[in-house]
Amino acid sequence: MPSIPIIMPQFGESIAEATVVNLLVKVGDQVRTDQDLMEVETSKATMNVASPCPGRVENLSIKLHESYPVGAVLGYLDASAEDAARLGLDNLNHEKNGQESLAEGVQDFKGREDGPKRTVEPTVRGLPVPANATGASYMSPRMKARMIELGLHAADLAGLPGSGAAGRVTIQDFEKFIANLERHRLSQASTMRVAVADAMRRSWTRPLATVALPVCFDPLLKHRKTCDPKPGPALYALRSLAIALSENSAPAGRLIGNKIVHPSTIDVGFAVEVPDGVLVPVVRNADEHPLQELVQRYNELIELAHQRKLPADATGGSIATVTNFGTFGLTWATPIPLPEQTLVLGMGAARRVPQWDEAKGQFVPVMEANVTLSFDHRVLDGGAAGRLLDRVAQLLAQPDAL
Image 1 (tube, one colour):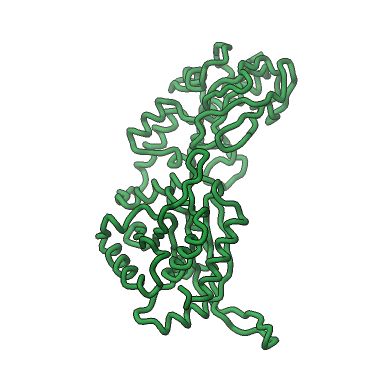
Image 2: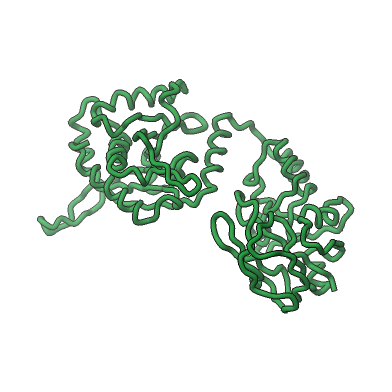
């Protein structure tokens, strides 16, 4: 009977290896498709390696509590010829020593232009990519080198189905994908667009979450009418967040290894839309200056950002960012923190809504907006994020104290 390799899967873009912590089957056991064979532990979580098809466990060439790279062969299953053909492994020759990788054990079989191809058929019609295609989940060194040469990342190949063994994306799949791009209209991405894309890609390697609160903006709007010059709505949020973090800086800490690095100063950035991207000027020591003292500097930074002339001391090093997505008419959004930050506070557009007034015993109209807090879930849990956001909401309701 054909032998089917059990491969260490790619559990995430940033995961390069996993440690086997528990075996759920033994040699000789009969298993079904997607049955869990072993538990493995990555730097993020404990997950399972499943069987690619029905069969009998022929060999498990691994040791408990040892780490194996993505693509390593962990063992073999005795399977039917039909299942081997379905997986594109009917002609695979291998050495059963448990040390070969997918790049070594499968590349020779599926890496040739004249080799047999496994077609990927969509299981649900009308989707932009086959529903059973996982994309570039594992890349050989040759693939990685070619991608580096072209300046590409794994995220760029998210919609690319593979024709190789077990759905693996081959170098031929990749080159065909690149060639097909030339059939479409292409335009050069700006340097800023590429920089923003890279920052968001790095940010997304972390588990992110968002909490939100509806906040009455009547006190803020009333206070703003009395000011000259008038603070921008985002500046109220920036100052409120700075005060809240000065009372407890832990939520803005960064997780480095097994340590939380607390900020030494409360430097808060704010997002400014510019052509083809976003810049984030920084207000230094925002907790030490009253709101009215910050207005002039805030307006200067906005103007410098639009001119793309921000000075070096007004960029980078901030511990959190404030973004006013309400300027686009949006009432709800989930902004992504910058890679070096844990927090981003967002403000939605204010709308007039009914609110119950206990004193009057009736509903009264108020201006209300959603305020969101997106955060790195490794550093904060929902409770801590909720308490921080609630404190920001309290401060926004007392603009005279800002």
